[in-house]
Amino acid sequence: RKYGLRYDDLLDEGQDLDVGEAIKRLSAEERDMRQQRLKRAMDLSLKHVYLSKEEQAMQTPFDFYLTPVVEEVKRERAERAALGTTQPYNRQIP
Image 1: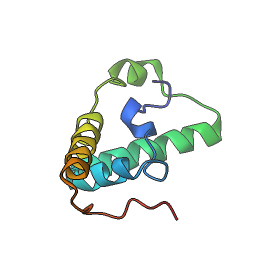
Image 2: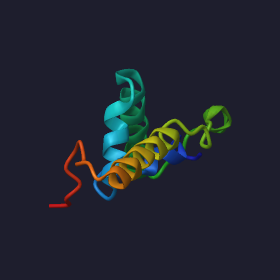
Image 3: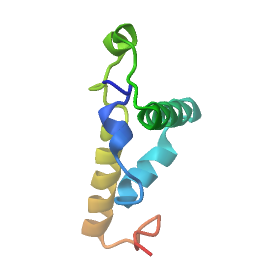
């Protein structure tokens, strides 16, 4: 809340490829807002300051926008595995 991030902003597409696939499925507006929140949080952290109390009160850290999409991607992957079909995206970590 002090940096204006949401819980889902902390999910890393480098650690979980399902998160990366879910981020690709977000609308362009939602992806842009996520990037702006991350940039603002990094900027505030580097400056060793927090958002003002008024801005902190307006934040919604538990407004999940990515988790439902990640769960959908995981269900689709599990269904494909049960049916024995190939994955639509590469799940290998380089």
